[in-house]
Length: 381
Image (cartoon, rainbow, N blue to C red):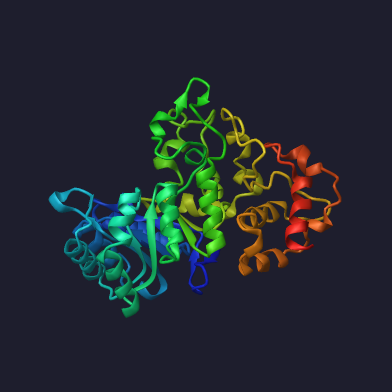
């Protein structure tokens, strides 16, 4: 297993995590099998947003004896009033369900406390400008929440949460289909006669959000990496061909600021399939040939796919482009962490010989040589 650090917290999570949604309403034996296999495979982060009592108790029972080795991502404001998933902005209700989460998981702290479902500006105001935020911050001061975060599906409201300065972690829906569509598009509506209907290439607000997170030191855990399974299906994929589990995970993990792809699993076999990502070759991980065929593709935009490799100068071109994208958000105030990441590379943009062999291999027509010159100017080498 590989691990990545959450911001500057020193807490390192597995790059493949367990999204526990599909364990809801399953018998304990299924929960135990799935959770135990995840732990066996080195998975150390589990998202528990489900508000139901039974699933929380089952997960708590399954992790007994392993709690100190796991990072639990729990949510504030998720409820099941009337036995239906819901979001409540009522402070007393939010408190009751969060306290229930601790009780049913049999723990006295949650590693990552997520302010749930910040999907509109109203959601942002109802949480970040009310007693709910004060409640969460108080839990953080007490150590009941170790890291404060937020979950969102909308880049505009997620941006507000990141810019608030209150969170160190964002749970966000990321996959290549979502990243090509305007905010609010339903995946079922994305299939057209010519591929993805209305696709506009890399959706600017989503790409900017990932870069902003890296700039601000806010890490991202990923939900919907498989598009609820639709990206894996020949019938439902919005692309000309389905993606594999490994390709979906790799796409998510190559976005700026992403630390873990939380894959929804409901069996040991599905956990094994997700973790098998770590054993794939670069060719097997490559998603570029599938998404490059989408209508009005990502032309000119680096998607960090490494299709440009190998470089005669041994440049990690994708990483240089990633750090450059973040630096260009504010060239006068480049985050020290980005400069540190860049200077730790084995070769720098200034080592580029201009041979353009990378441009010949790039499926997205990225002007790599020009961008290497730009990176040299920005980083000084």
